[in-house]
Image (cartoon, rainbow, N blue to C red):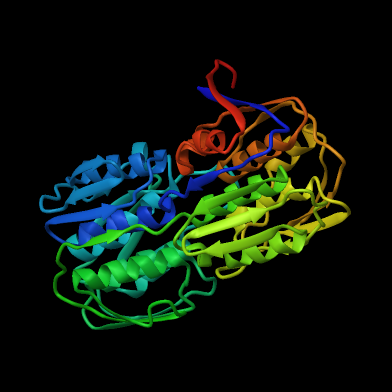
Length: 421
């Protein structure tokens, strides 16, 4: 098991390229189950969640080759329609295979998913959508057992906009007989990319990018190619690293517009932001950051996946800020660890009240989930002395060699093997 050892107080400078979005790739990869042939996906990040999905798809019979951020998926010889616990326990996105398997093969046995260890995140919206499309769903011994004699178009309304459920419903509906209308669909960039990829396969989807998707089922789909969009959460994390260390850096990100809600908030703190083609510059030198409240919401609002990182930044501002998570009401496992570094944060229901302090001081802290881990790294970059961040395997699930990118910008951060847990 590895840990990060960070010597804080270093200014950052330079330019770094943002990796492909793992959340987008994790939806696109299972979509290849819907066709028979060779699909080429580029700009795939080298993170553990991607390797987990590859292993799951290989179990199903897909042949793959992953090299230099290009993933070749050959879906012409699917041999299994089950996603066993050994694969699914590591990552919630594994449930994305449910819709494609059910639509193409009429059956799917999928373990109830795992992933980050926080909060109840039920998949009832996924299952209800499959039922609306004509699937029979049973839960047995921790598995979803789904069968159908043929999916049929239906009207599906999500009471809560869900990226995962929208993705699964769309992938099931494209091969269903007749018309499907999905209302209150998620409009995140990852869903837009998925729908565009399905259209390249030959799917008939209208309303892409809106909350109302109209799908006319087709009898078959062909292989297709696509490039994965840049990771807006990685971009936000790196920009926040510059802000918390009062630095000036550049990032290369061709889809920075996907991050507008975070950019606006960074400007409210006093940081200056400039865009020139694909280059985004943040200049947070010689400023005293203002405390800025945020409330997370569905896209295009402030993302819940940036809530922990924003909390770290607010620790070193003047004044008091309130950070409310309206998506996941108990996503605050980073708070006790930030307080170990000298922060002054109080949890009140689904909000944190952050009282800015003059400085943070290095200490040993424990990662608990992907984004919480990122917040501890950011705090460590700004803290006096040495910070050790344990259990960084959480970070490896979603950030591609983040320590190398930060080191390229001048951070003093090292990955060290450890027996500590």
